[in-house]
Image (cartoon, rainbow, N blue to C red; front, side):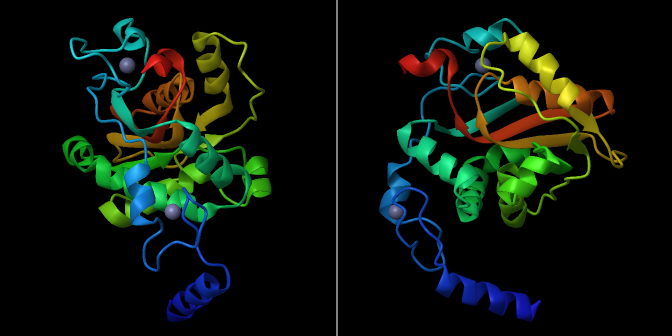
Length: 242
Ligand SMILES: [Zn+2]
Ligand SMILES: [Zn+2]
């Protein structure tokens, strides 16, 4: 353990962790500069009671959720998926900036403290990547985010419950329902779900909800009662006008 700590410290010196927003070496002991943190596009307007997307003051649910098609209980993304976040998330996923996931996990945890207390989840479940994709990338960004939330909240992360058995093709042309069905085939429940009643799915971006819906369908048929989600960002869909 001690050896590990020393090795990490040394790695920090040789490869300093960078701030996900400005890309400069982050202040020691914090993954993000205080001024960059203030620039993050946090959602402060009223949110949809189901998916957490911004809604007008008079609305309880967004137009999508009013149709009642989602398969999870509820959830939220903390930030808008604007240009700043798009760049940071893309570097997390494709440029090996694993540390950005750690910072975002901590920020999600801080901003969703009351939800986590209210939901009382038994565990966090990161949306799995196909093993081959994870090998190419070196890590699954959702797992990095989940572990950072675990570290701060004490809620364990389980990576053995939901697995990815298939890679999915680009699904831009598909309708929301077809996307969900396509994703359901890509996931399966594994591991020991006994004792799990309430779980929180973790992902980097929530857009149409197809991924979270598919994961929820699979977990529900494995006997899990309450399924929530937390995402770093909310993007796409109708709320581009906000
Ligand atoms: Zn910065
Ligand atoms: Zn909604």
